[in-house]
Length: 106
Image (cartoon, rainbow, N blue to C red):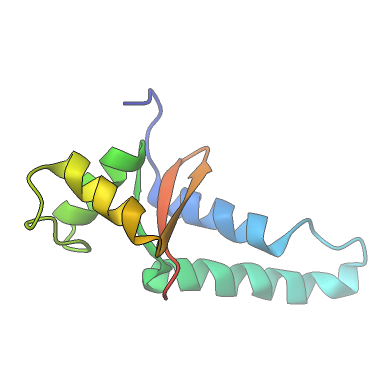
């Protein structure tokens, strides 16, 4: 596992900022930019982000523990991770605060 502490709120805020892009030069456009960030962060919180962990395997473990993913059909978490990756309905984004499992179907 990585040596950093996973911080879900910061990871989601980081992704929202990345999604919104750099702040506009014109101060009058910043309110709209902030709203884009807020909407992206809310989308992640509402279920688009399944879980945040130190790496992909840890993220699946955390999703399972939180009841966000049912891994009972798999022998272990490695098999569950392989199934998630094979399904192609998810993506993974690394942040300084953890790896985020994103549900592309939400």
